[in-house]
Image 1 (cartoon, rainbow over the protein chains, first blue to last red):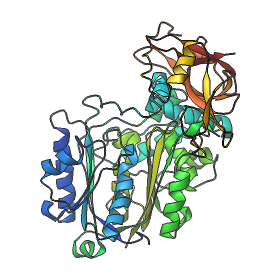
Image 2 (image 1 turned 45 degrees about the vertical axis):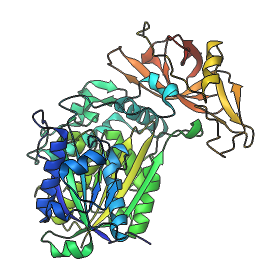
Image 3 (image 1 turned 90 degrees about the vertical axis):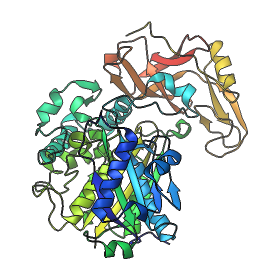
Image 4 (image 1 turned 135 degrees about the vertical axis):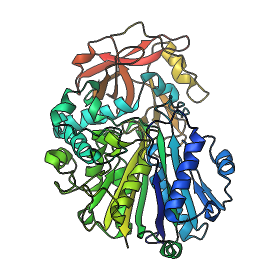
Length: 382
Length: 129
């Protein structure tokens, strides 16, 4: 049993807003759903499956009702920023099993307008909550140990931001459009050692959505055909504190599962959407997915190797979370959307990868240095 | 070095209450599984490695080394350093480093537990040994 080729992404939409104080969060979900349906050439009543995560206010009960959906399959898997990559895999499973035929996945929210509600406490709360783990320092702890174990440098991490900024200059909706240098990153204020402000992603209001459907329905529509051929998901935490190693992510498990199912290797990939909550996130995930050996990520990302048309592995050609958009502090959806644009040939001409027929979209969710999930999707143009 | 920091009291629950009772007496406890022999932290009643319910409380030395850290430069309560300490007994745990120059922390540095008061049970932190 495999989901390989059983589900196609027929519609995508990224909200152009980066600041939406005048809209409600539910409204943003509706707007991105509408956008993805229009892109696919479908209507609301065609939807029979709905996937959402923790950003959707109130979860499935209010959202299904608010949108006026009539669904026969639902999934509210919540794994932070990578939820939507997992939703894509789960939608493919549901479609392959005949549980739904046209699935909607939405993400939207407004962290730039106002603070997000705190995460619900887990079993660890009494033993960790007092220590103030935040995204910045939880990723900082990973970067600090990666530097210690492998000699990774701040200059190497900075190259990831530099590459993202080269791409963002062509994205009219990007929050940060200025091209930056390694020096700019190193001279930006230290936020949580060893991460500088420019090692961190943007905070934006907004959202995105996609429509996942059967091969038959996708072929009846007008968009270029993009299908999921491999998917993996995994979780990692300190697990009782045994053999703690913060230099790798759950991508070491989700990645190989996805590549094996797809029957391809990292060498075959033409374009990579890699979750870039922080520069270190990208570096570790590239290693974990097998684009280079563990510990060699610093060398791999340096000297523009991630810049489209310059380096060997074009990444996040929309400018990514580092420069363009990080709606609701969750980057998984936009990773899928730019991968689909690349495979359709709809990326900006300045960053479009030639003959882009195979892409990976990968992300983590949660706190990399504490507890996080990972999901990997291998996408193919048919 | 913002020292007058106020910490919220741990909520505690039936599974972990013995840890906080011991903390009031200045003891730092971990759990050990008598079936597989593995120690773990934070404490669970069922071993996260072999899933046996034969876990027992054990007083730890409170000594360890810094596995990693990150110095948060700004926060509403001032700068603070979060990190992981690998205990002499084996398990690694999340903590804050206190009562020291946060700029001088190093991976591999020896540290020891120190309890800070709350309105309830005291909370464990680590400081250079």
